[in-house]
Length: 458
Image (tube, rainbow, N blue to C red; front, side):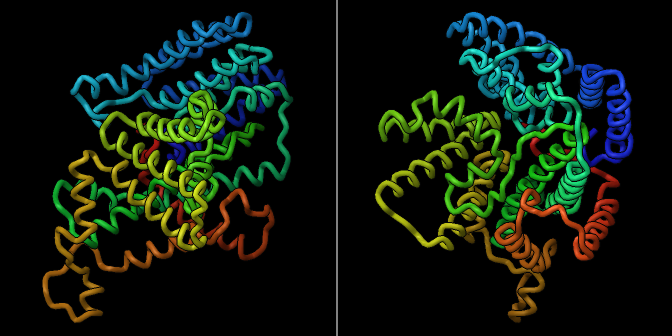
């Protein structure tokens, strides 16, 4: 099941909410165990073979966590982190490190990167004395909660456990917000991201050289596909969590409005950036041990982020690009370099979009070929619209019409100027009602054949 699957939306969610409400009549604990069972059913629906790994890690970490709470030894922490990383390294990186497979060739256990990082964060918090009490039921729900299990957001132990201790409560405003988040997220996924996918696939997976226009359209298509797909997932995850009375953290804050790469990482995949800040950047020295140490910590953190996303040279080079950009920005800021906001906005957006080419390409050779096409090395053949407008009489592209430019320009205008869903006021007027009705119709027409979310691959 995926969030945009009618079976999930029309069967799993209503039944889970109903079972949760019925169990609440008995006790809060019973309702939470019902939610744990529902979450394990949700996970098993993907591939039940990976369920023992998830359950095993959920059973192991509280034991290590209690030991760290009672006697915070660095060696015990290292063992705990190693035991968590071992399954991830074996299934995600062993083949690549041995020269056998890239990430795309390996069937990963769903959500392993996310629930591994979430549990490592718990162990570090326990070692640092930030975990006050540990309850088996709460910890199990903390890791397995279906809303954030398979692709985040990556939650801190404390921010969820404090909610699990409270009695269930959901106001009319929270219910309205939940339905809005689900609707907006589903629209982003089913209506926008899934429509952009074929344009990106034709360029990155087509198997042959592409022209100037095709390369740019495919690159921008992926830039927006990835954003609307993942942001849509995270907003739906927040909405589903609210139906059960829980608030999970925001993961996207209009990242394409960023005016620097540093700001981009504060807005894109916010909880992953927070995790790397707390558990990689700061332990490496952060900005407390001199400028050179700060530059090294910034670069290393971005490099590790690339490595986390996948086993392959494309991901490593993507991390190197972002790490280099972060260092250059810090250097420029310290040197007093300040560009106008408009230039910074466009420059950041173009850098991020061009870097996504490496992130998406199945190999470095494919990425280099696309970059060459974007520079015109493989020919500049216009689509039919441009040919007609310019009077061009030579060969034209058959797969693209030229109207893609207007769609891309519209998406750029949207992400640069419009508020995100978290900035919307929960009011109802005829304009918003009309928009919601139109969005609902578009969603219904789009989810007949739902596709998986892109970040499930990581």
